[in-house]
Image (cartoon, rainbow, N blue to C red):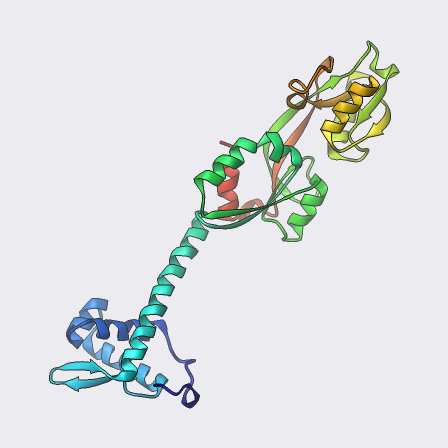
Amino acid sequence: MINTQQFKLEGLTLQQLRYFNSVAEGDTFADAAAIIGISQSALSQGIARLEQVVGTRLLERDGRRRRLTNAGELVAGYARRVLGESEVLVDELADRRSGAAGTLRVGMIDAAALYLFRDQIAAFSEAHPAIALSMTVAASSDLEQRLVDFRDDIAIVFGPLERAEGIALLAEPMNLYGYGDDPSAGTWALYPSGSRSRRVIDGGLITAGIEARVVVESANPAVLRELAQLTGSFTVLPESLVDDRGPLPLVVSDIARREAFAAVRSLSAISPLATAFLEALRA
């Protein structure tokens, strides 16, 4: 048994282990050299260097052949394991470089997860079982900050973008719903002041010449829908969140549009995993 206290392994290389593995698996030095495509002298020098590193003889002559010593048997087993693990590592790194495997950290607005890209995300997960999705749901501004802080790899947010670069995914029409003929005379339930959705909505209302008297705010569109129904107020919501959830009179179609973006730190340095996810969202 090799006494590891008597030598150090810092000089041990994969090349030396590959050379020794070829000797362990070949009948002769000529066979071993042919396996890895080098000269017998280069092979002999590599084995001699390995023996210097481990501090003991690994081969002994047996006629024209060389036989593994007890220490050689031990090192041969080690070489097989290390070389095998190295091949696995190379394959896994290649998968990550190609976007076929790994962990992808995705920040996502709730609308993206609930209905905008729900089917695409499910299809991506099914098509890429080797990619683990780590998802965080939050507001667009918070997700951009997480992206800038390197806590996420990509973020699906509503624009306008403030701190990141982005790729436009879709523009979501938003309709004006409510009760009565004069929205300017009624009460309103809208997204919170300062939110990106609210900014888009306010712009649409100004263009339409409508003044909104907001009495309640919520970031949850389901809450806005229910409040509009309960209080007879006006609201602006995506069509997909209204039509199948009970009666809410349509007043004006497409009064505003909010744009969804795939936000990244740099358009020139998108990771392969993020690229694969982005392609799935745009499919």
